[in-house]
Image 1 (cartoon, rainbow, N blue to C red):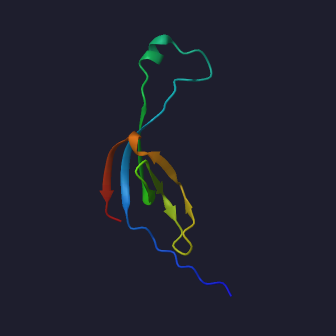
Image 2: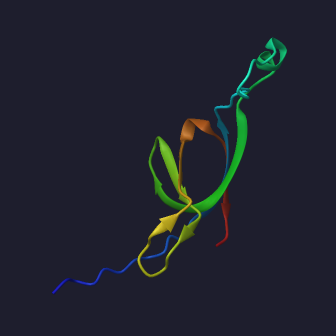
Image 3: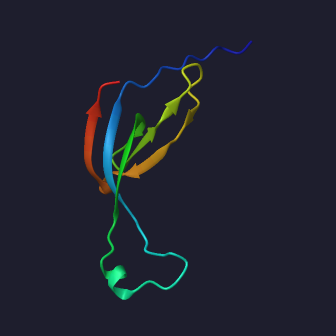
Length: 89
């Protein structure tokens, strides 16, 4: 008989602002001025903290309370994070 596993919902909810790579690539030639004006994209992500280490944080947007299956995950290197805000779940 298999032991029943119990999933405990994470309680830490955060919003992070982080820089991601970007590209001006549109499938054709891009004027040099547009390429020189480019920079990283500023992204905002909100989610429950699934894992955190010294190097990265993993957020998930949706979690099944019964078994912990999740969707909408993103793993962001901490070096990319410019702001982290704790939210109230």
